[in-house]
Image (cartoon, rainbow, N blue to C red; front, top):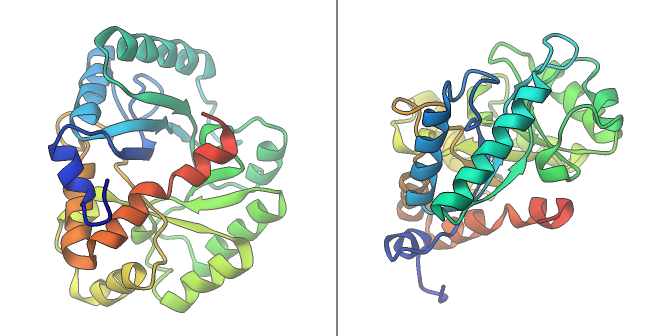
Length: 254
């Protein structure tokens, strides 16, 4: 794209320009897609939404729930076959959305919990009721274990309510911030709006992802979310966020 072009204009022209680092497209392993046909619908929708690369990130809760690894690998391979057969032009990688538990850092080091596309970047989720101390302490432990934490849908955690808190997480633990595209299409509550705007104007957001789970209901809306960013925070911000996932792919392999 030229310097003055917008990412959403490129999608309108049929160019695939987005990387989705957080989605639940593989059926039968979590609360995402329930059937193979739903996975296929979600993959077609992703291609139509301008997504050329995605990282499948099923929910994982280390030490609490057994993840159905064999099912995931079988269904992931079938999804890749479908992408090729239909010529969808999507490159898919494996990952996980990790609900932090005390053994998460050790299992990451042992390679028993997936990072994003085999990189040093780990997508970490928390409960909306988790405290600031819990979130900060968890990110510290992930970082000390040798990984760069990516905070999944950070807008969901009331305990993180100040821009200085976010800057602290970034400075101390190299934490990166992911926001859901769907959040950008909705009205932000007044008490949260100044914080949310500050994340973007202060260049504290690193990734926009779909966190898509189902068709219909929680389908992909990357184009809509990125268009909203361009209109409210400027096309340069939209371009930066569209390109940002390259740091993960370059670190993990393509």
